[in-house]
Length: 365
Image: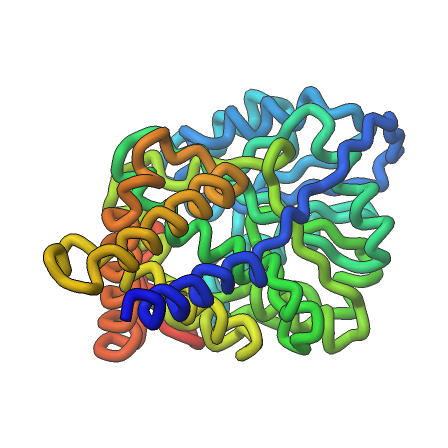
């Protein structure tokens, strides 16, 4: 009986080995002189606490002649003043037109002002290692297409560390080898690198102007245009601190695309992700079966999952020493996020983000 229970649990855990790829960006210390050929576009809405980290990290990159553009997306804090203090170009995003979401409109306006034929799109909460930009440019050149990076998550407070399982599932989704044959393969919007030529051929952010999942849909546009898409893990190179503003912003951030994003993945990816997750939840039920034949195999499965989460989790982010062993806390957080996302999408047809109500697949008031 114990073996009959343990075998399917072991198979479920093995799905993680099938999904995960340690696809980090190789370090390049070559000094680039782009002579105005590189534009960095940063959409920013109420990002006064994040911008100093990003702009400071851009200042130490071994690249000359960068054109850095911060697009102030109707911020209500000191976003513009902080950006200007770093000497970068700051433009104000015009009033939001019908049919656009806020971030897409801000990025489109940043692109319109850009001068480079190499484009880097960065979220304001991103932080770069000193050799990050040369390494990203070299990786894009090798890919002969567009690349994106899933940043390493610096989680400092306890509520931030609860994002362990959502972050790990994100790595599975974006690095899954099965996604390479997915015609709708997505990008990770926090860090995207492309040539102007490829970006225009794919239609740019205007082609996904009303989409909530702009990055996933933009990746599909690149694929439709015949441009290779490659996703990397940011470990040691690109990082961010996602939600320092409190657990409410964390819940809003994860839930805005939690349900919709699953529909963009290949079934060859979603199936093993689902199997892995079901096995994880089953192993976490071990305490409820103490005194039964199920207790030992479930406990063994819990231990195997814990070792796997410790190993993979160190590539996803910094979540503390103990939380990977107490992963049921993060699993419960993930399930809450999924239920909350379903509630918003099904009953309201919209999600909340940065003070805006964004209609699902549609327009933003």
